[in-house]
Structures are given as structure tokens and as C-alpha cells.
Image (tube, rainbow, N blue to C red):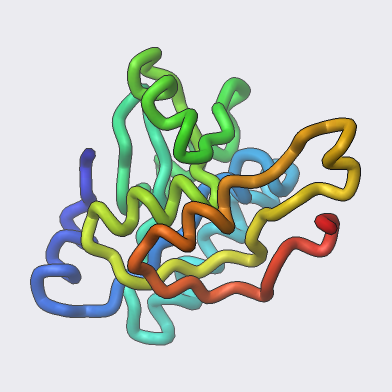
Length: 159
């Protein structure tokens, strides 16, 4: 796991660090709005006195504190895996690029020593669950983590 120097220094000196998921960059919004929003969110965290730590996987390496060029890369790359905790080892082993969901971000953030995670919405059970069997790992993963999550709640498209 590679932690940016800025995030390392902030953790060492007890400056607040806010983990951010990268799925919104790769899968949540169209290009180039996705990159603009990611950078705006980082600016808001900085304005409020924190250090942003966008989390993702670049060519099989977990990165905590994506640089602007890495954010642009994740936001424009064509084959970025959407990672919950169960896909992280596959992405690493295959040396792929990956964007972290709430579950993967909280898992990685906790291991990096980050105590706060901000996201727009948390995943849950999809409305057509009996056909799709689509149940997010987010709620279960958050129940196992010692991390504060700041969010607007469960995503509105869910049951």
C-alpha cells in the first residue's frame, strides 16, 4: 500500500485526514465532470482544515491519497474495476486499476490509520434483489470498521 507523503505527514502530526472513495470518479459521473467534482471535494476538505485522501488502486497498487494526475487517470481510464472488499485481491493480483466503493474505502482507510470517511451515499439492498441478488457489502463492512462515516445516508435508488 502506498500512502502519499501529504497523508503520511498529516497522520503523523495528527492533522485530520478524510478518506474519499474513488468509485464516484470512475463509475459515478461522466467525464470530465467526474474529475472536476473529485477535485472540488478535495478543495472543500482542505478549506475545512483536513487533508483529503482519495483511495484507489493503480496498476495493482493500493494508493491512499491519489495525486491529481492519478485522479485524472482513474477518471478517464476505460477499464477500471469497481472494488468492494472482495475484489481488492483480484485487482492487485492482476495488476489492474480499481476504484473503491464505500466498503473497500473504509477497509483500506482503517488499515492506513484514517479515522474519518466522507461519501455521498452508502450502498445497501437493491430494489430488485430477488432477481439481481445485488446486495452491497457497504453496510456489513461498516459494521466491522472503527471509522466514522459522514454521508447523506443510503443511496436513494435502494430499498
